[in-house]
Image (cartoon, rainbow, N blue to C red; front, side):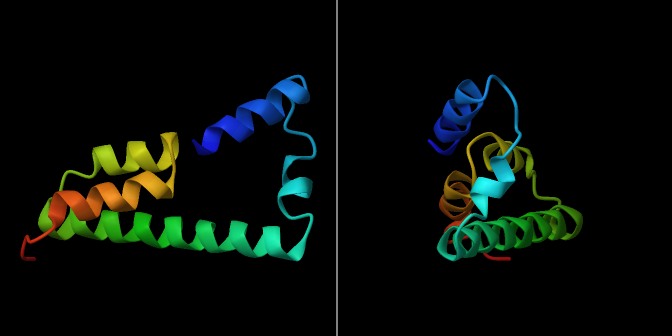
Length: 87
C-alpha cells in the first residue's frame, strides 16, 4: 500500500518528516508523478464535493479511502459503486 513507504521513511528518520518533500521532488520523473497524482486526487476531491452538493451523494467512504490509502483505491471504488447509475 502507498503508506508502507511513508511508514518506512518515518522509521528511518526517527519520526521526522525532514527531507520528505526534498526527496519526493528530487528528480524530474518523481516530481512529474507526484504532481500528476496530486492534481488527479485534488480534481477527484472537487468532483466528489460537487456530487455531494448537487446529488446528495454520501462521499464519506471515498474521502476516507483517499486519505487513508490513496487515489488508487478511492477512484476505482467510486467507479465500482456508481457503474451503470444515471446522473
